[in-house]
Amino acid sequence: MAELSAGSWVLWPLFIMLCVSLCAAGCPCTDPRLCEPITDSRDFEVLVFYTKGKNWKFYDWSQVTTIALFGKYDPELLCFAHSKGARLVLKGDVPLPYIVDLKNRTSWITQKVELAKSQFMDGINLDIEQSVLKGSPEYYALTALVEETTEAFHREIPGSQVTFDVAWSPDCVDERCYNYTGIAESCDFLFVMSYDEQSQIWTECVASANSPLNKTLSGYQKFTQLDIDPKKLVMGVPWYGYDYPCLDLEDNNCTLKEVPFRGAPCSDAAGKQIPYSKITKQVNSSLTGRLWDDVQKSPFYNYKDAKGQFHQVWYDDPVSISLKSAYIKKLGLRGIGMWNGDLLDYSQDPIAETQTKDMWNALKGVGLL
Ligand SMILES: *[C@@H]1O[C@H](CO)[C@@H](O)[C@H](O)[C@H]1NC(C)=O
Ligand SMILES: *[C@@H]1O[C@H](CO)[C@@H](O)[C@H](O)[C@H]1NC(C)=O
Ligand SMILES: *[C@@H]1O[C@H](CO)[C@@H](O)[C@H](O)[C@H]1NC(C)=O
Ligand SMILES: *[C@@H]1O[C@H](CO)[C@@H](O)[C@H](O)[C@H]1NC(C)=O
Ligand SMILES: *[C@@H]1O[C@H](CO)[C@@H](O)[C@H](O)[C@H]1NC(C)=O
Image (cartoon, rainbow, N blue to C red; front, side, top):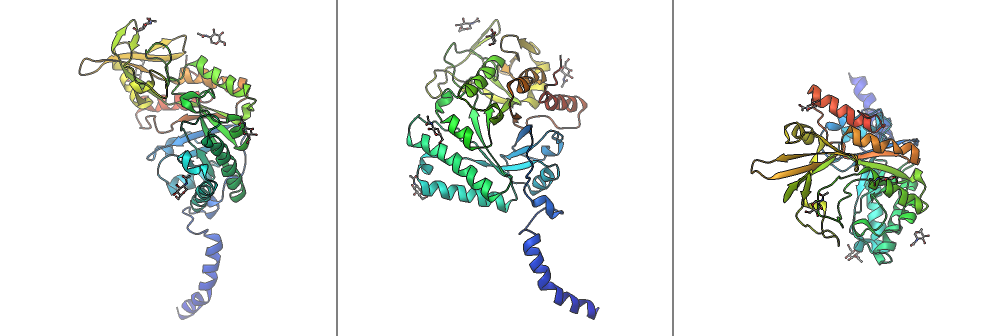
């Protein structure tokens, strides 16, 4: 016993020295190697937005390459993602008027790099959905922000990934008049949010699909017409729909209350977002069951609520998603992703299990007909 305690006195400083270098200041993983950044590049990206809870345990990890942390940091998720070779990246958002100033921009970037390092993370997903006018100070500051953030992350965290979320089309959708070409050039890739495509309704104020096929494809066409390499584009698909209360419902034509958005007279803000996990339950007890719009290539249904109000729900399911994901190869895109990974029913219920598996498989273009 005496010998052992004498020995440990001698070893103690050595142990501290080792830990300072090896325990990497608080690595939460039992295997310290899992705190090293992921450095290998994948030729097909599957980016998942994580928002809450422990559903990540049931994600299809044979597909996932990046988790964007839009919920609380979970060390268990970090260790697990790294054990699967998947990156875990921060969410980045900052008011643009604030980072017009170079000092402020640099300090924001430094803070994010330090946060990522202290949590053993692998990059950042910039989710700046603010209105920007072409040629404004914010326009130039945003391009600079992406360029400088990418430079800092790549330099400080080897193999790290910096990505930027864009609307379904670069045509100043939602007044996001950004320098898309400059932004795409400087970061690793753009995540194209091919949803919320009714955020600005310029025609009749009626309910329609969240992610209609043709409109979605026209968005990618516009990005590539700007000379953006398709390999810099990841297709984002929705795992949610919109529930619209109808002012009037005639021939499946659901008239909406006028809710203006960024210059447009009507918008999807007349409805509310509803997770796929809820849709799968509601559709069977709806008035119509699942209907299919063959122009928009999207399913929808009508229902009447407890107060007698008619609603129309537009959503995406494995059929509509696989019709879109089937274009990834044809268009030469970098990969796919969804908003968001936690909108499915991950319970042990056998029907839910099948529906959830089908949604994950739809990312690979495996549809159900
Ligand atoms: C830069 O940051 C400082 C300190 O946070 C703030 O007071 C100032 O308003 C910022 N500059 C701009 C242009 O927003
Ligand atoms: C966009 O950004 C790139 C890179 O910074 C720059 O070369 C280009 O001139 C910018 N284009 C426009 C239209 O502002
Ligand atoms: C749907 O309703 C709107 C508003 O009442 C009307 O203008 C439009 O013609 C209708 N469309 C169809 C396809 O019935
Ligand atoms: C709803 O109906 C479909 C088609 O009949 C069926 O496959 C599915 O299991 C049902 N879902 C639930 C939650 O009962
Ligand atoms: C969808 O796009 C294709 C190809 O651009 C076009 O041929 C077709 O007419 C479009 N369909 C609708 C309903 O707009």
